[in-house]
Length: 136
Image (cartoon, rainbow, N blue to C red; front, side):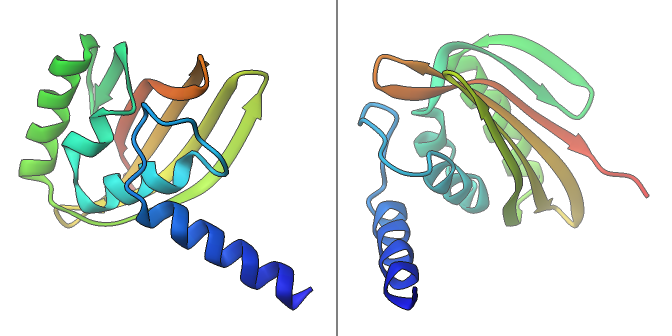
């Protein structure tokens, strides 16, 4: 059992370190590199995962955007709210769709991030990216 855990950990670490882009076929957990890019605020790498057109919702503003527009919207958010931590808290999948919820700490606040991805060819692409402020 320990060997299986070690191998799994090494594979996930290796996959996260490759800098995988959406143009490469994904083997393993598609959310590992995406979470890494959100945590780093790395919009250029993250936007490689965007579909050509996607829905992006930041706090209370929702837009159907091109990949380029969504990149600018997300960059503006990260410029004002520097990411400090991001963790996937829930994942699910159904057919060719994947879904994840995550907790983002940025700019001294906590946000819930919702991601919907769909399979296009042999890669997953982000169809919806949503950031909501969590209020207690």
